[in-house]
Length: 255
Length: 263
Image 1 (cartoon, each protein chain N blue to C red):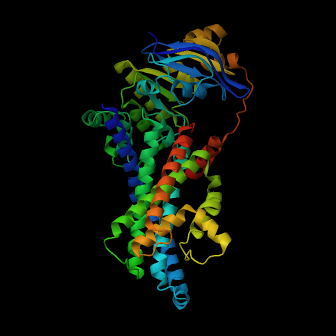
Image 2 (tube, rainbow over the protein chains, first blue to last red; image 1 turned 180 degrees about the vertical axis):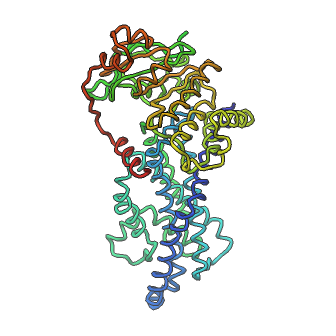
Image 3 (cartoon, rainbow over the protein chains, first blue to last red; image 1 turned 60 degrees about the horizontal axis):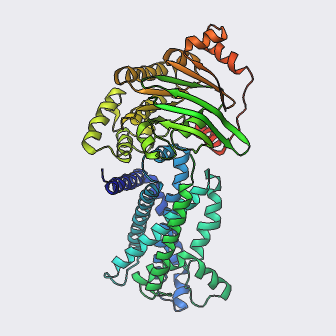
């Protein structure tokens, strides 16, 4: 068989596996919607009046893109980290002794994880609409989805890279508390990036999720802080870099 | 030509020599047992033979190919049943087979035919739509054997295939393997801690201890050489009675935790 077609088929079956696992674990799917819903309702309605008084407009409108980004990054990093589970339950060995390159395996897995995380983002988008969020322009939904997928791809690759370095799930809590949570809270998902104290401003500018949130906000409600093309550029470059790093780390896994 | 040829194979992890100057050959159609106490170097050798670990020195040919130079060639030639379960519990039996077939590039029509044939062979065809997490240990093992054969390998590697199974299941697993060997001429390379299994199934045995091969021959020859009645006694005569301590790595810890969870 043509090697290209063979690799495409391998990527497809790896991708399909991630999707099947996602749709089969309904409890995880529903469970992972609870948190974004809580954030939308509690923060959205809780801070809404103050935000309005300060002249920021509707807080739900402002918050929704941030919460969509949150659900994407949580799902994406978790999908990447699932490699640790595959290693633990032995399935990774089965994949790695197949006559397929590591790069192909990484590509299939990452695309699968990114698709799942994107789906999760889309579901939260509709959830936000139920709570009262309205995107400002229908024409911008397509570019918004591009940002959804970019953020999903980037953070699945981050998860894969981390998982390639860890041997078991013991470091998982550490990653949640010292990587995922700071990435989320310091990204401008919850507050505007303008008028911040200098030190916080620098940190938010270094947080890659800031550009994802900004891209989503810019496409969904307008008014991007960095500008959409700059957001897109940063995310794309970073995604390629992390994918390369992740592939390298993944290629070194021994089972 | 031998189907597995190993000459002066050595594997070092830092200062520790896990496999030390090991040489042996397996002929087509043999059932070859690789026996040894814990930590003797069995799994390390299998990993080198099946391309997941690089050797320090020596020569290895599996199906006429070098695992380090032509990994994909060797992977096509090997069917592997690992020591630990390696199925996706969230997929069905059929999906696990399909996944393997696609990764090994078995064309669709042929793949579907073989999956049906193999699942019928290990008596899992009726359960093909069930998720693997609902399977018993024996059923999982049978599925893994069927999966290992899907790409028509020349050698089937079985690393402790009957670990943790009851005598009935062990017996039925061995009857499948022996039938495959007789009907298809499949070469089988296996490790086990059950000496009576090796005695019954193996045409030839190599005993490895502290990374070195201490004896090779048919079960009868080994018993004769050590002047013992059973293979277990022969094994103890050759490897001594000291209990081996293995370093517990992260994988073993996870394995232990998994056992606690899935009980």
